[in-house]
Image 1 (cartoon, rainbow, N blue to C red):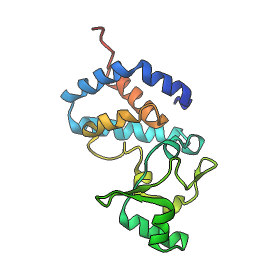
Image 2: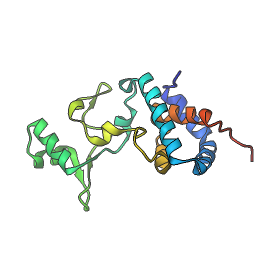
Image 3: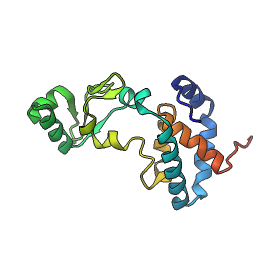
Image 4: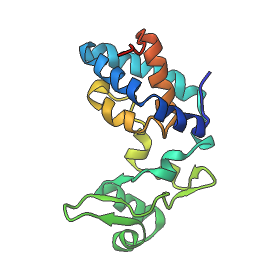
Amino acid sequence: MCITDLLFIEKATLEKEEENNHFLRSLRSRSDIELDALAHTLNNEVSAAIDCTECGNCCRSLVINVTQEEVGLLAGHLMLSKEETKEKYIEESQQGNCFINTIPCHFFSANKCTIYEHRFSECRDFPHLHKPGFKARLSGTLMHYGRCPIIYNVIEKMKTELSFFEAAD
């Protein structure tokens, strides 16, 4: 059974901050291959049990990075010029990095993405647990532990699978 109550998860995040820091350190000795396999297995299990449209917290709370190519694709989908699309929806840094210019995302309505078939790669890939290199990304993943029920449940199941128990200091 997966926990999806965001208030519960947010509270648990505060209560488990030290535990999660110890867990992060405990994984340093584990092999990348072992952790990737476990993360992928647990992600598949948890993702199948959680309906993201019941949550949508990522769309409500994250800065969404967009590639220049995706800006062009969005413009085509919206039947706007790339310049009009940037003016309405995109912020661009001095280095040329683009991101959606509002939080929550412009394209989030009624807990659903209104451009779902054309959503950005960062949105498609979140929470990134299906990718290789789990251990290298774990600090970043834990930043979203209190925001995403999938991450929360995967990490908690991983603690159980790896027989991690918070040691009293």
